[in-house]
Amino acid sequence: MKRSLKLLAAAVFAAATSTAFAQNYPSRPVTMVVPFPPGGNTDLMARALQTELAKALNQSVIISNKGGAAGTIGILDLVRAEPDGYTMAMTPNNPITAQPHMQPNLRYGMDTFRYICLTYYTPYVLIAGPQAPFKTFAEFVTFAKAKPENVVYGHPGVAGQPHLVMLSVLKAIGADGLGVPFQGAGPMSHALLGGTIMAITESPAVARASNLPILAAISGERIPGLPDVPTMKELGFPAVGFSAGGLIVPARTPDAAAAVLEKACAAATAAPEYKAIVERLGAEPRYLPGDRFRKMFDEDSVASADAIKRAGLGAR
Image: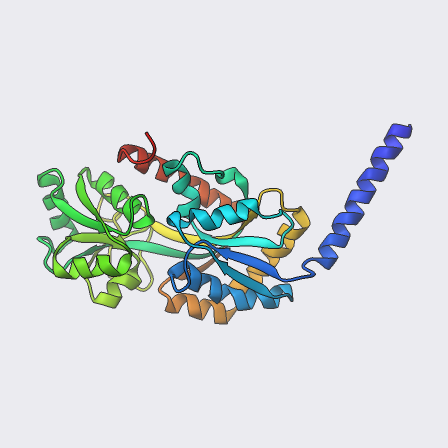
């Protein structure tokens, strides 16, 4: 009897503590770690969300940029943070779903985090250079399959998202290619324009910025802003490639804090001001709650692990 009363008292205390936490949280500024330098795509997405999220939380949101090592240095900052709801990260999929397969000694994996919400989604497209020996997707397939490593493509870093997406394209058509790494999307685009490389996979915004021809959408359905560009699935070679990002926190973050953050995120991503900024950046404002966000990253992690293994990348 005494044991039952103690358990009941403990449960009542825990419930009261959780309720009090939810009512008071957040009582001080919240830090949003961005695992890339200022001015990059992830940083811009974070700053687009920052203002609206602060309104929804009725508290300041402070951005902390910590770039390096394909996003893993900043994510490790989150790993070391107290799981109290006051430190979160805005991250794209690659540092979470791909880099742990490249660097097995990383101190994190999918289960290290709690997934709060997806905030944006950017489908990828296959882009040809103006001097490439193919002008259509059909010509690209024929050229790529004629000879191993016929296609010379660019990517801004081994196992970065553009690299993994190109690997998925080549896998879908049953061909190989020769990848050339560059220090960022800018130098890569210049090399494409100059004819040093023949093709890349990137966001539609990159293609529009340089007026480059798009051969196919690497997405499940046609991209609203590119209604005349067929998907690879329509062309008979199903492949999906994207960059998508959202908010994560340490796995042991209290339920009450996670619930407050998820509700605030839903409000922030629904704001017209946020949607307008994200669309100007060439992405789709897209909200997913924590469970569906986690499911998306789980599936991408499986796909990334397969691409990395097939390409012989990662630790040996």
